[in-house]
Amino acid sequence: MSYSNKTLVVTEFVLLGFPELSHLRGLLFGSFLTIYVVTILENLVIVVVIQTSHQLHTPMYFFLANLSVLEMLYTSVTVPKLLAGLVQAKTISFSCCLTQLFLFHSLGSSECFLLSSMACDRYLAICQPLRYPAIMDTRLCLYLALSAWLGGFLASFVSLVLISRLSFCGSNVINHFFCDLPPLLQLSCSDTTTIEALNFVAALAVLLTSLLLTMVSYAHILATVLRIPGGAGRRKAFSTCASHLVVVAIFYTTTIFMYACPHDVSSFDPNKLLSVIYSVVTPLINPIIYCLRNRDIREALVKILQSPGTS
Image (cartoon, rainbow, N blue to C red):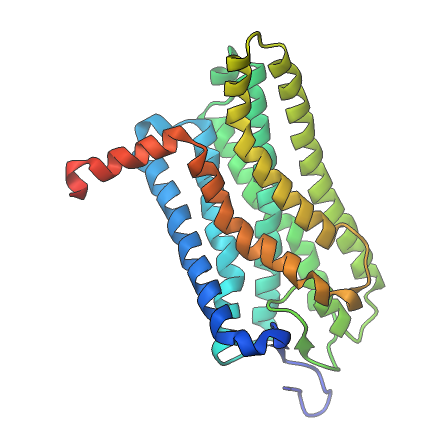
């Protein structure tokens, strides 16, 4: 541990990681490294394909490109430090710990807002097709994307300020593989009642606000689709939303359970698996869901690979 000599204040933390799987350290390192590299590459491919293919310069793919950028940053906040901990150093300074906490929560909040913006886009495209081009113009797309990014950072800034005021003067071992709020509160020797309550309200506000907007959008979409005559028309309308719905279901199920459900921070250890799902696995499968189900992206990628410049 690292303490100051007089006040015994913790100046760095030890990320415990997965001590129960220490005998599988090599396998864990290889698995997480592979997942991280594949996640970065597949999201990068989506961004490049959307950027270089003129037919994909539409609001839906604009938001999808933003989501891919966000996913690359989101997984890069936690996985590199996790890999370093599996090899050697498990320590992290107090300032770096707060930075990781802030970036992780702000990017997660931004994803909530971005997913709700994508749901609104699908609502306008399906329920208001004639007005859609005029409403969802470039200015509105930029405004929604910027609001999602800034909203996530602002939503997490208050938590960062409150956490920075806490005192840590006991154990410096964080029972997690990255700096997250519940294990940090468990280590603090300050009264965390107020912070826990404010964090719960903030998480509930971000998650439920964005989820409510998403659910309302899809309720209108469902009502509109059911009025479409013929099964082919309904399947086509549903196919444009299916991938987004899958991503929304996975993301919100894990994050609501982790951050919007009151629970004792001392029972945090079993939730490491959930943390792996939404911080490591979800960024990996999101591009797969979008690409495998999206014919436009597959066709655009084929054209890029078959172009003379790539030969």
